[in-house]
Length: 121
Image 1 (tube, rainbow, N blue to C red):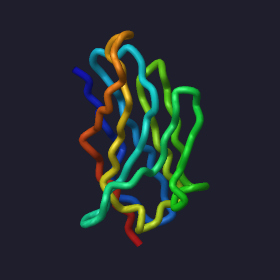
Image 2 (cartoon, rainbow, N blue to C red):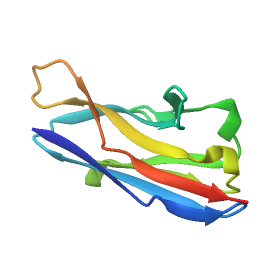
Image 3 (cartoon, one colour):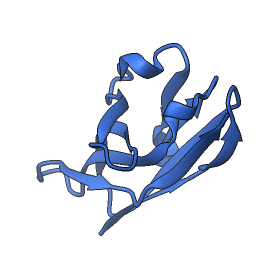
Image 4 (cartoon, rainbow, N blue to C red):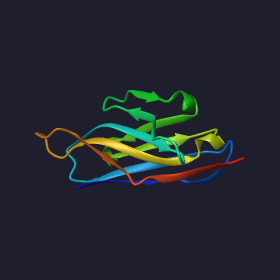
């Protein structure tokens, strides 16, 4: 089985920074795209950033220039560096990854449990 575990969330002041980490473990052959989503109370879950197997990235307009997604393939880990945080960034942040557990199997999406990010003002 594959597990994704997020860490790094917490309470910060507006303008501050946090770095979220998401480590995949278990039976992993390869990881394709890795993504960060967030969901505020009463809101839908939105894509924040994604990074492909080749390193290409995509960001939501609301976080461009402030957030950076990166990955460490040796550690099966994806990061989200969040700078210049705003109160509207407050949400539960979830990582997701498309993972193949064997060379002959189609990739399957896996999700982390979420980590709370709260930005005060």
